[in-house]
Structures are given as structure tokens and as C-alpha cells.
Length: 494
Image 1 (spheres, helix red, strand yellow):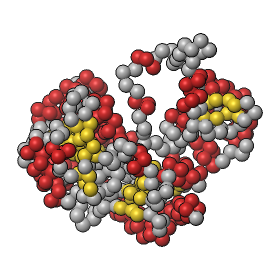
Image 2 (cartoon, one colour):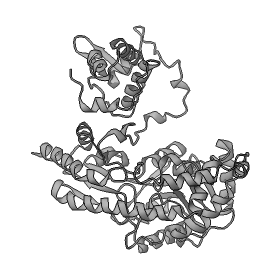
Image 3 (cartoon, rainbow, N blue to C red):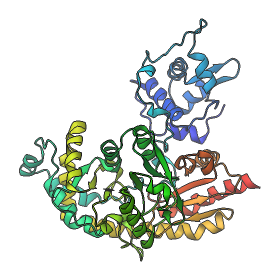
Image 4 (cartoon, rainbow, N blue to C red):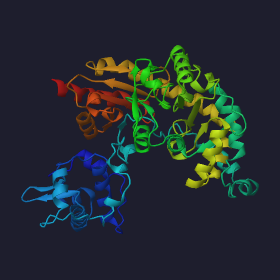
């Protein structure tokens, strides 16, 4: 069995020192199985083929395979080879001949209150930067990161005097300089003018949304979520309440109808709807706020990618800026603007909400690292943030324009949408398209795209959709990458 490109890329970033090598091979395969990159019943390479491809000992691969077989993740089939275990294989391996269930994890499964690992996740290869054509949303592009300005900011935050200020235990406080920069230089761009005590720093927007769910959602709280929408919010809400309600949406975003009115809380992405990129017009935004006021609905606005737009309607006011009744809670993040690894986000809300969030956050992790907060505050204060926005937005608009020009030619059987300022295209393929299959075949050609079914409550509704992001792909790679993708679609439909 020859090792194909996908398997070589799967192990592309693996360190090859002798110590723990078998565990590394095992871990990479296990993660690929758990995230769905390796499908049930897929045949894995022979130990000889994989060892030769990786330049390691065959015994090392055999040991990794045996551990995975013992864990029920692989199954050895006589005279056929090793395969990714199917659900039937796993059920069979979990019982003895006497019919007694054997839990190889030592009985832990029965103790879990929830099973997050069983929730479908947005996945991508961990070594995605090794692929030549990564059309992924929201990922890091080293060519756009402001390396020298960031180094300057970190250095300024690393003097003895500065370290003395940020190195102490802040308990439940945030860096005052960062709060000041948010209030005066970041949030006003979105029309938000927050008062003292109305902002809390989080470890990215994910942490912000999670804390809000914990604070506001009880077991019987009716909560509205977008469909299609951000799957992690759907999972958070689904864990917290037995009354999750899919909000009605059209081409303009969430519809303020009877379903919306029946919710106590609604999580919305009006700036760029996830994943369709729809920008809600001002009339619909006002209607949503009016309906929320009439029916006592709290709105959680996830404004996850607003700050990079340079297009004509970039100043369309966010919900929070239109809110006169303290009914909107706003979440933002620097992950899409600077780098996901920075892990700094924030919540803007009325002071009573922030007061409770501070205590909740202290119980969880006290506060986000203040050295990163201080470095970011310095970065903004020195003017680097605004310069970075201008430079990055210009590059991303160039990429968006190039993709928009090519899609009608290279993907003629598809419909696509990208509203102004969005960092991705939402693609609707032909009725018979299986985007999961397309993702796998594209990956074999070095092209990474995201299947659309993950965004839907019923995955079957999103079977023919996929997302093309362009924050992580160099402009000169867009043309050849799309041509490869178009060839795969033509071969499928020919």
C-alpha cells in the first residue's frame, strides 16, 4: 500500500526524535480519528509502508497500531489489514463473552455528566500550515502578523517597572491600560462608548460566550440560536438548557418572529452571520431591538470579525451601539484581527452583568494573563493596531476580489455569497454534492476547505454547502488552489 499525500501531510509536523516516537504516531492517528479526518472503516497504511514513509522503525509503528487496537480505535481484520474502527467494532470490543461491558478507560464513561467529545466539531488538520492551499476561515497568516511592532510592544511591557505592575495577582481585575484602550480606541470604531466597569477581558470570544451561557442560561431557559450558526454556541447552549430554539433566518439574518419572541436570550451574529456572511441591514437591526424590548429578550451579539472591513458600509452600527435599554451584551475578540494564539477577547455589558462575570471568571481562572494584556494595550497605544488594521484589510480585500472574480469561472455549478467585509465565502454546491467527500478529496490535493453541514442543527440540510476562507492563504496561491478545487467538482459532476 502506497502512502498518499494526505497521510504524509498528517504527519508533516511530527518531531522524529526517538524518545516517545510511538506515542506521537499513536496520538496523531487517534486525533485524526476523533476529529473525523479518518473515517470509520478507512484502511490505514501497513506498518511497513508508514514506517518507510516516515523514516522510522517498523516496530515503532507496530507498537502504535497495537495500542490503538487495544483502545478500540483501530481494528485488525484477518488478511485485510488495519482499519479505523466502526461503531459496530467499538460496541463489539466493549463486551466480554459473558456479556459484561468492559470499559477500557477504567469506568470513566459512566461518571461523565456530559460527553463533549461526541458533539460534532469544526475540525482542520493540526498541520494545516503545511498544506499549499488552506482556504480556512480565521486562521493565522504569518505574512500579515505585525512582528516588529508586536516585539516593540512586548519589550515596552517587559521593563522592570512594567513587570512590577502586571506580574502581581490581579484577583478579578484586568489590566487598566487595556481597558482604557478598549474604551477609547477600539470600541468607538463600532459606535460603542462603554463606561467604567462595563468591560471584562476574556480568553478569546469562546471564553466570553461560555461565561455568558453559564451566567444567564438555566436548565429551563428558552434560548434562541441561529441555524445555520456557530456550532460551539449551539453546543454550549445545548449543555446548559433543555429548551434550545432555532431562530428563523432569511437572507437578511435573524427574523424577529414568534420564535424569537418566545426566547429569554438570543445569540446572534448580525455583523457577519456565521457562516453565511450575511450583514443584517439597519432596518432589520432596529426591528430586532424593538422586538427584544417588547418581549423582554436579551441579545448576545457576537461581533467576531467586524474590525477589518474597509468597504463602503463598514460603519453600519452594531446592535450594541443602537441599544438604549441595556438589552444587548456585546462580545469581541482580537483573534481574527491579530492572531488566534493571543487569546484575548472581551465582553461589554451593563455593570451589574460585568460584576457577576468577574466573580464567575475568578472561580474559573482568576484573570487572563496580564502580560499579554499589557503588551496588547501598548500595541494599541503606540498606534500599531490602527496601522495593522489598514494594512491587513487592504490585503484581505485584494484576496476577496480575486476569489470573487474566479468563482463564476472555476465553480460554475455553485452559488456563492460574501457580504461586504466578510473574510470567507459561503458556497452552495449542486444538489447532489457531498461536501464532506469534497473536503476529503480536496485535502488529498493539498486544498483545505470547510464542510458546511457542521453549522446546521440537521447536518443533512448543509450537505451541499462549504466555506472558503481566505485569511490564511497567500494571494498568489488562490488561483491554483481554486483551479484544483474546480477540477474536483467537475470530475464529480461529469
